[in-house]
Length: 370
Image 1: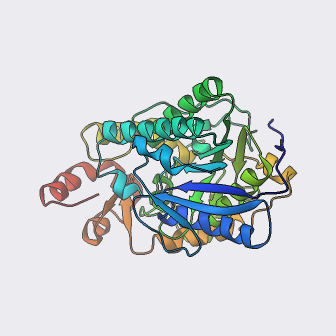
Image 2 (image 1 turned 135 degrees about the vertical axis):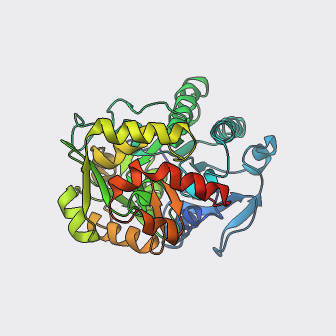
């Protein structure tokens, strides 16, 4: 298991930390946490926001740039550490791209960030991926240790994108030994304007489970992720850091808090149907994503805990925040439906999953979006 490791920091000058995608909702949480730490007199000094537009936070030094552009290097002058969020929290925007374009963009950005950081003498690069890269399995330890192997399927979905990002980071650690690289893997993110495969699972009419499944539901509030990143940068933690609310929730506990009922299918029926619907373009996410809703992938936050960090939000509170953030939305298999379509499948998620094909073909012909 990974343990905290501290880099020697100069007492004469606080660090300048740059955040990519700083104008996004998640990036805004990160820069605000860094600014708060800077105001408190910690090791964080100047906060640089890297994005194509300015965000709402005051006190950020904005440098407008496309993360995939070679010009990025010129915007990293005097920067000591870079925080790059590779994980997406805007599924709707991602679905407007095809899988190949999305993957190429993620790879191009991380390659540009790595090369630019190494070329300009940045000391540390912290990259946010996801605990989903460990894979979800009925045989997983609960919780998974930080040094557990990455067993997720390298499919065409977003988890496959993150596996590609992490592979580049492993190579970069060998090619650029002067650049300390830390991978931060959060549990399922919860917060305002967070839109992911996991949040859309709770937009379905019922919670899908599989016979013999034993999910261990665990979340990470975006504010907790932000403070965890501050701690990681300030103390030089790594090379792998996992972050989540403490413990986890059982399926029954999730049903009580959410007020939702379950529908149970065999694994073969659930995955087989999802595979067919994904193959014909009706469901946007690969069938392998279903595993994250029915099998455990909880993590320990061991390194952060040893460094004194604590989550401010527990899992039950995070679930409440998630449910509030999706209010008014309806989805089946991560594809959002309008109210009329959602009502057609409200009798049960099983009917919605197995019988969605014809309904969604009609929906698409009418020009319905993701």
